[in-house]
Image (cartoon, rainbow, N blue to C red; front, side, top):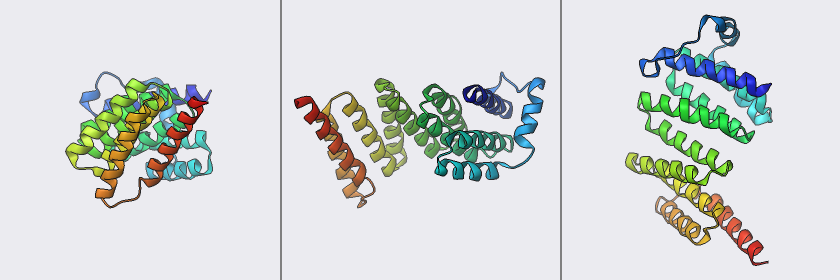
Length: 225
């Protein structure tokens, strides 16, 4: 039931995006959906929905949060607040991933969020979308796709001088290699990420690097037994 509802909501969001810009021409909401649109837009604005969704997610009410982020996305797109629209879509994709709705997560990020950020020329939004897609495909065990999107994240991050996102992309690639049991290559990526973080004089990645090394050690010990 939830998946049916979210599919309908995603259709409305995508259709709204098409209606807002000619680059997405070819679909519209259609008269038959007017009652649904009224239900989505009648009570609160996008910021209200987003704040409420954030509170629900923090409480662990993921389905309610997903619904509200969807409503926020619809409102932001309708009011042409495309940066906030993208943020709501990223949060939707993340919750879908947490719920193991990998197809829905992919659709939201690849077909809507990434196109939105590309259209408005937001490099940070495109980097965030590539990262999210890397995470989604990693969780879904689609390692080739995950590696490709983490690599794209790194390329764009390096081009734009976003060092944090570049280090994150290397850590993502390391996770892919761990899943592929390429432990030596993963270690090299972790060492590289560590050196870059030290050069930047930040310890924000220390826990991730440590956890990944523990993960490798555990898997190697298990294999040895």
